[in-house]
Length: 251
Image 1 (cartoon, rainbow, N blue to C red):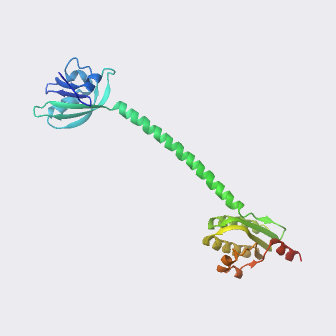
Image 2 (cartoon, rainbow, N blue to C red):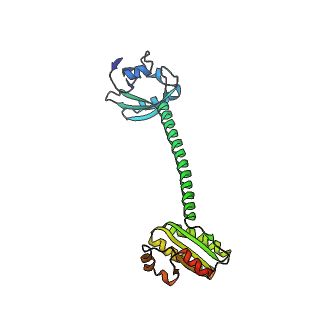
Image 3 (tube, rainbow, N blue to C red):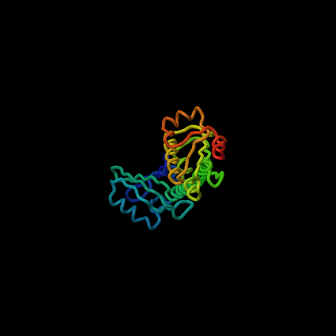
């Protein structure tokens, strides 16, 4: 037998199954002392090599259990090519260990992704609940008396925020008899177009449910042009301050 330099476990065998040459890697893995291919093959895989020899000349790849120096049965991928004399050139790739290592890495990755997905899902749920709560707190419904309701708005006016606030306010006013509803825009920040339209819709809803008045208070020079642009004057009174409105109500 001839020892050759080759990067992979490699054997060259003639048509009778005698090993002609081998690589260092093959010598490390297999016991080549008998010099025949049959001594390396597990009984259950002999038929596969016989079938391969029967159609010598056709390149192929198949799985086979081989005997190694450390194990009686190890699963390999066997790659066979042939020369014009029907000598077999065989390369071997350990399948069982590679697959096990690949499976372990894949399982580890899947577990990590599952944990990350669940963690992100929990954080997303928490964030959504927090944002919902912030929107709810950005427009609390405060009864000042049996007939006067006070709704201060905080932060930017968005469609989502006013939708949440309006639902809570509709529910609250439907359980009372509020003839005056005060919407305070003193602490309002940026006003989005869809937000101001939703606010206009909310005002109309409060008027319809209560049958009473709705007044905007806390108007600033910055906000006045915006509300004027959307013709709020046609549906709501815009008085200057809470104290002024309350004094008018008492008098």
